[in-house]
Structures are given as C-alpha cells and as structure tokens.
Image (cartoon, rainbow, N blue to C red; front, side, top):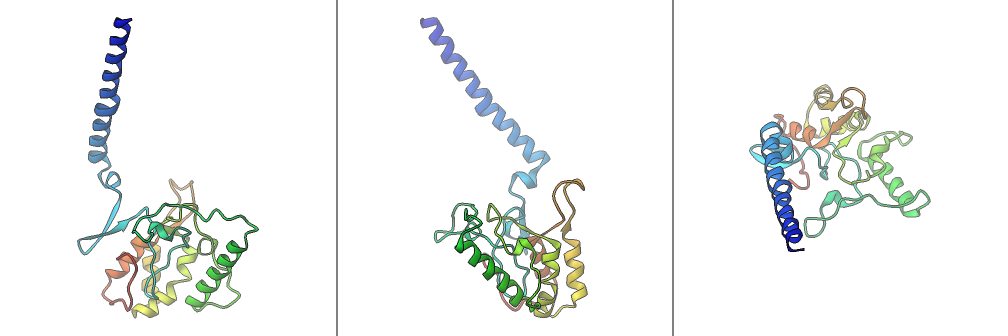
Length: 203
C-alpha cells in the first residue's frame, strides 16, 4: 500500500514536471524563435507605438477611415476597457436583430453617399460571431474608397491601390475568401502624407 502510494506520488511529480514545465518551456522557446511575431500577438505598430493586433477588430469612426464590420460586443471593450468576445445570439425572427440590420444598412449607405437601393455587403450588415473579426470583404472596402479619398484629400486611384495592396487572398488559395484587414489598411492610410481630418477610437 505504502509502495503504491509512493509510486503514485512520484509519477504525479514526474509527469507534472514533464507536461507542466518542460513541455511548456520547450514550446514557448520554439514559438519565440520560429513564430515570434505570432506568439507575441501579431501586434501592429504605428510611429513606434502599438496600436492593436492584426487579429482583433477596432472601432473606427470618422469619414477618413475605413469602417470595420459591426460588433455585438463593442469590439471587446466595455466600460472597464475589457469585455467578452461574443455575437448577439439573436435569432432570425428577433425584432432587435432586424432593427440592428436595418440601422446598419442605412448607416453604411448614408455614410458613404451611396444610392438608396445599394446592396450592402453582408459583412457590413451583420456582426461576426466573435464581434472581433478584423477583416471586411474587398467589396465592402471598395464602397468606402470615395468617402475616404475625399476626406483625406487623396485621389481615389491612390486609395484604391492601397486597398488592393492590403487585400489578402484565400488561405493557400483555397480556404476562405479574399479579405481586407481594416487595421492594417487604416494604419497605412495614416502613414500617407495627407493629414487625417478626424480621429479613430482606441488610438
């Protein structure tokens, strides 16, 4: 009985060290050496200051920035600065969801001076399941080019070229769809010579 108990304790200690310390340290070192940027959060810097992560959406306001897709969780920032990532969890028959969708369509069309019968891309109408999706579709970005160009005093061609530059292809050419990272695109806009006329939240 005592021998079995001692063996059990030793096995627990040995495997705790192997799986809880050695394994963790080994993979931490491996990640820092091989995937340092990803392991540290894929952070984005602008003028030497960290402004976010490529994997987390931020709320941008003002006519001089591309807008991200809607978020049901306030882009993960609550009154205290932190809140959970989540979707709205509203069903298809929810009056609240229908109202939110209608408001999103109206806001996007009016904000971008588009014809009232414009078909707004779904990603600018519905929030993502996480509320933190950092990408929008190329179509959604294209519809915002004119507004951003006018606000920043840039030619539409220059802004369009920037959108093309930050349009990512499907993963390995197969998985997912083409997409545009809003934070990277807006950071690149701020790097251009033309000064912005309004500011973005969370900067």
